[in-house]
Image 1 (cartoon, rainbow, N blue to C red):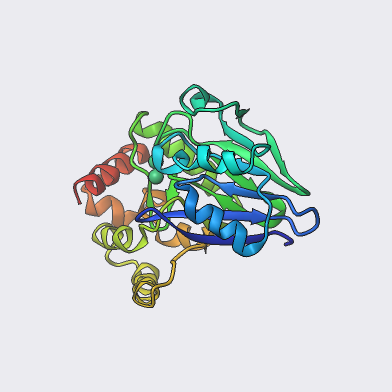
Image 2 (cartoon, rainbow, N blue to C red; image 1 turned 60 degrees about the vertical axis):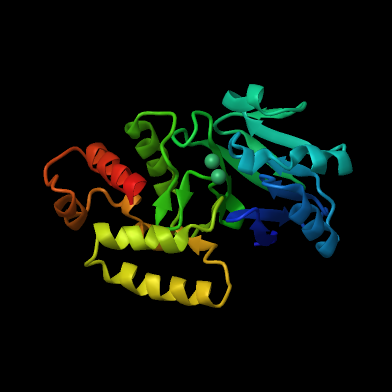
Length: 256
Ligand code: ZN
Ligand code: FE
């Protein structure tokens, strides 16, 4: 592990994240919800921004790019190819399997359509880091705005295939409310109960709840656990297809 990561608050509940390669000095921002905190964090760390890795086109993930670009005119901005038309600027289009270099660090692009049609996540395999944008949250997942449920389910299963020790970074600090919902779906999950106590304590102390490992997500995130008997019982779908169970859990979260 050589990458240095700084995570900080942007807007109301978005995360800004910087990933830095100390050997070359290269630094990537994962999305730019707003320019101010990203520029301030770069200045505080004395890091030079070389890349912006965009997960999806929503305003709360790209809104600060023009102002940051004005300060760093040579920054390379990587965007999902399917949403490139909707993100301003002369950007680099990323496809499934592309490897994006940040100095000596390497991020693999994984397409995870669902929250938006073009959403991508960035997996720094050698560093065990995943930047999941609004596809996967701690104990939650993004709203499925633009695709059928099975598309989002397949995207989540691509993430579930990554190593459990992977450190997960997300687009938003939604953990507490996600966990409250998760408890309504799987109230008997003891790991979930324990995690909620830890999460509540972190928030009380004014701390972030991320990153976490994918392992803890596999154990507590209802959107990755649609196969579980208790979840199937809760939603009254003991024999349904797993995608239908997932879709029902997502529907319930929308109304929660
Ligand atoms: Zn979004
Ligand atoms: Fe978002």
